[in-house]
Length: 328
Ligand SMILES: [Zn+2]
Image 1 (tube, protein in one colour):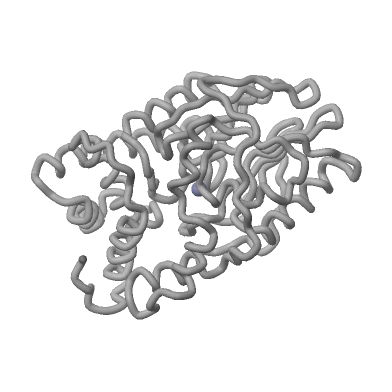
Image 2 (cartoon, helix red, strand yellow):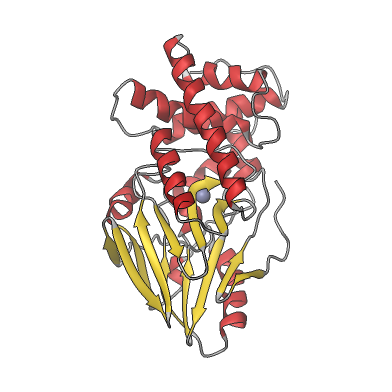
C-alpha cells in the first residue's frame, strides 16, 4: 500500500506516456495516460484528488511542452479515482460513455468519502479500513465534473495524426466502462476492466462481461495493456488475468449453488489461499456480491456502503485487529 513519492511519466510507446502514482495493495491510486502528437495533447483519466492532479499535470506539461494545450480527457469510467481531477483541466472536453454520465449519481460524493474517513469510528472495521486506505487522500475542493461529450459503442478521434479508438465495453467493472485503443502503437488503456497485482473489485459485472472485454483487447494483439491499477502488462500477463477471472467465475457459481453468502464465499476462497500473490483479497466480497446478484437475476444497484463494510470486516479479521464484530 505504498504511494510512489515522485511518480514520473514513463514513455511506453511513441507519443504515449503512463503516470503511475501507486503500487499494488492500495485503493485509489490509478494509472493515468498522456497522448501527444503534432502539438496536441489528450489525457486518459485524471487522479483522485486535486493535489495529485496538479502533480500529474505538471509532469504532463513538462513532456508536452510549455505551450501545449490539453484538448480532452478520456474518462474510462465513473469511479472518482479516475476523474475527480477533471476540474483542473480547464477548457478540455471530458469524453466518456453515455452510461458513465448516468452512473455518476450512484457514486459516493467527495464529501461522503471525507465523512467516511473522518467521522467513522476508527475502532470499528469500516472506520479503520477507510482511514487505512483513503486517509491519505485530501478530498477537499473537488467538484465532480460531468462528461461534456458522450458516446455509445465506439468513437474515433485524432490526437495530431495519432488515431485513437474508444470502445464501450461495459457494463463490466462499472455500468459505463470504455477502453482506449491506440492501433498504431499497439497499446490499450483498459481502465478498471483490468487490475494488475490486486484482486479485482467489479461493481457491475458479471464476470463474463469483464472476461469478454479482456478477450476483445487480446484480439487486437496489443504489445502493452495499461491496467487501471498496477503495472503495465504484456499479452501473457493479461491472459493470466483472464484465467484468474474464469476461475473466480466458476468458484462463484459453485459457492452460490452451495448457498453461501458473498462474505462466506470470499472467506472460503481466502482461507483456501486460492489466489496467492494477489493483494487486497477482501475485495473478493465486492466482486462475488456482483456475481451473486447476476446469478440471482437481481438487477438492483450495488449497496456500496454495505459492500465496503463487508470488505472491511474481512480485512480486519485477516489482520487480527480484534475479534470480528458480528456482521449487521
Ligand atoms: Zn480505479
